[in-house]
Length: 436
Ligand code: 5AD
Ligand code: SF4
Image 1 (tube, helix red, strand yellow):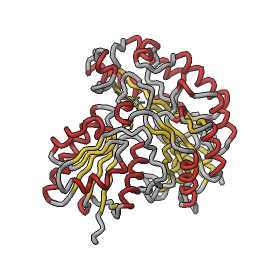
Image 2: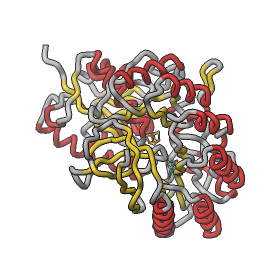
Image 3: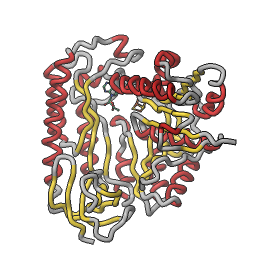
Image 4: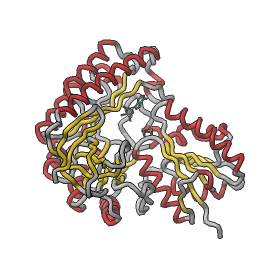
């Protein structure tokens, strides 16, 4: 029997990267092997994101390309999975390129769906609150990487008013700690050096009497040779207990990604974020008190419904006050079906959103440069990830704080921990010399 070849293309967040690896495992069990060459694929799976309109536009363009590919390769089947599959459903067939559509809770059915496409295009976007993909060992797709993802929760119950995720990924559920420990251990055995625990809001993890601080510490102690990271945290539930667990365990990286979204209380309320600017700043003080050398990053978007220039300046002020090491910055994108889309007015003109975003980027670049310059002369433990993009004579790797450092290769190899003294800094990268 001919073995089918499957090609994956993954967009959006790290959760999607982890999901593609799980779908790869499901397909392997059905007799498929993965390929890096789209031209030779029998099945293409595109794992999609709906978080902003431009993420979806990118997928429509990609489907246009797939339509051409299908023209040349008659047997090719194209599937769309992920958040856009859930949100857009059978309208994806309008592209003329799609044979099957599977939402985030339907991945176990994909082998069956592929077979059904022999007869007609199929959609499966049923939610299944019990689905945690227990017992599936992901098939790692990036064989070069020393860093692997382990998903710990799926879905989201927070309903931030702008966000599509609760609608595309359904209600929150946690995976069993046993599954998480087994997966982490397997990564260690395969030679991985770092794991990132993933969830839309990892802080709300709960399985039996295991909460997130306990889980994080248990994982860290289970794989003591590995670095452990986690993302994403919601500021409303980042507890001192969690910070203490990070501080206590040297292999839990001193880095927290804590999306603030806005610095204005009025806007935060309208976003249904359930915390205030003051609460957020208090959590930042707690982080700095309990983990003094903690790297900090955030997500912010400007131009949300009703955001005035003075609201916006509050965001700028918060950025200056906190001094994030880095930030993902966006402009508001109206998502049909969300509370904001139905009940609030998207009234900040597009040119104004663009201008506000450009200013945010400029401000953050300056802050990142300052933060990085303050690392010059300091020493950091760096995990070697691979060759630097700019030079094959150099390696790159990250500090616990999640900053990228470039340094001379010497006799080191991927996966080593090296101590690097920082000598130069730009807004995006550090440069240094290995001292041991
Ligand atoms: N428009 C713009 N940005 C958004 N995000 C989520 N929803 C939207 C939206 N409708 C941003 C938030 C979130 C990140 C993943 O994407 O900052 O933290
Ligand atoms: Fe995009 Fe959010 Fe879905 Fe991730 S969970 S793919 S960021 S919409």
